[in-house]
Amino acid sequence: MKRGDIVSMIGRGDFSSKPRPGLIVQANAFNDFHPALTICPITSHITGDAFYRVAIAAEAESGLNRDSEVEVDRLQAIWRERIGQRIGAASNEVMFAVDQALRRWLAL
Image (tube, rainbow, N blue to C red):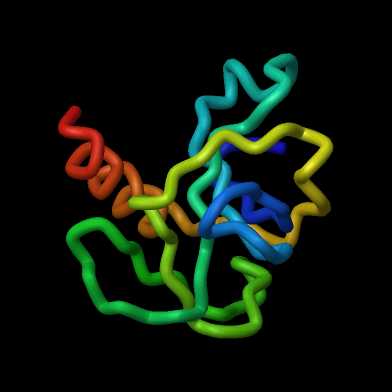
């Protein structure tokens, strides 16, 4: 698994009661050995709030079956055993937009 991969995941807490797709945003340098991965969940509930949500299209590359949004505002660390298979990957354009949204959300 690497940064930019879209995976199936089961998070915990108020926003993660069902299996859903998520985008790995953690740096690749940590992905091979750290027990958790930092992921932004993906939702098909479109808000249109481009300040901290990033649109991602349903297409072969993403592996998504519905147009969706990356939920930068719901960033979470997920234990490896709660991460399923790789479904697809985000484009370079989506990852650039996610990076910008993360900087805004985290005031970096």
